[in-house]
Length: 501
Ligand SMILES: Cc1cc2nc3c(=O)[nH]c(=O)nc-3n(C[C@H](O)[C@H](O)[C@H](O)COP(=O)(O)OP(=O)(O)OC[C@H]3O[C@@H](n4cnc5c(N)ncnc54)[C@H](O)[C@@H]3O)c2cc1C
Image (cartoon, rainbow, N blue to C red; front, top):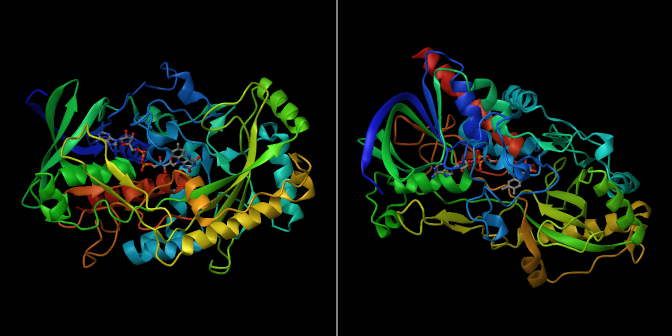
């Protein structure tokens, strides 16, 4: 690597051009008097018509390119591209339960209540162009699953808002098979602004912190090391990337930092701790020939999506009126691996939405190119709460599979799924890809709190974190829409503060 190059000054530097980073860069550059630099490790293919790879645009499958570690375990998958994980994700958008906000208000104050967040949820829905699933995208399987949930007595609910348990369809950010990512939605309308600079293929290494203020950030681009300077710094590198940047900058548990030769600048025990993700178990069911033929027809027409409906379900451990499970009937080409032409996978996943277990993210070294040590900690809670809820979810999967509507599409009819031992559940566990919590917000007297309710890092005056990592607990939802709303909220808090000063 070459030595530090020129220093350029901006008002704000946003580190990480993912879902939250695109929102922040777009919202903060609305003020023509503010210069904003957005720094992203992955490629920026420019505006929507700028030659984006087909894999990223095709909303019918989850691409494995443009990620940090192509061949890593599934839970490590995260995008490395402008637009972040919205370029590789399932385009599903749901909102969590009212109960989620209670945790967030305790940690960050009144602006995190359901009512106070509503304008930001609405702004995100509008700017991302989220819309209901069109009828043409339902396969025989998805339609039967809707009928099956009704057959079991679940009420139909709106998945884009809080509410009650029930079944329904997500809001989607895809149009005729095109995945509409956060860069298209937020950055494209802002790209021509003179105050906005986008630096792609630029890896953030570390910030320089002197007496409680960030003085610059080192990035590596094309083998050249450069230090960028700004008045304010916002880290938005995601739940895995943000704690890594903080740790390399000397913000974190002092012992861990010293172990890697990093000088501690502030002891923040929560950096990298409290990793919370939603594990799930897929229950395979054998599709009938008729189901496979119907799926083949749909695929030939270009309209096959593996899942288009979900059930919000409650275990007996869930607070009244809320839900702690998502049941997802899926049918189509397998997510990983392949089957011969005309053969498909069918089944139902049970996802644990409010896990008690916690994992962690840590450094393996101070080298920013080295893979991180990521431990999701699935089912590690000593009371066994998480296993008990997933087990209840599997019972509910059995009930869904045994309905008249779905039962006739699988072999044997009613396809009662196997019962799994605890060990089998652990072995079959996958992720819903909704990690949060590694730079959790909380009051300054909580030793594990990393940021306050406006994203400001405790003990560092001009530094914020603003992405999925600040949520202390995961919502009972898919996280893209909540993270969009979090970034809208934090951008608003920053603009309000700036207007006052
Ligand atoms: C495979 C997959 C499927 C998913 N499916 C869904 C779904 O269907 N619905 C849903 O709601 N949610 C889904 N999610 C989750 C959703 O995409 C995330 O919650 C959301 O993207 C989080 O936004 P973020 O801004 O915190 O992080 P990201 O969007 O991941 O953005 C972080 C950005 O920071 C960049 N970065 C990281 N480190 C550095 C560094 N050192 N230097 C420079 N740049 C850096 C990354 O390259 C990335 O672009 C899925 C996620 C994955 C991975």
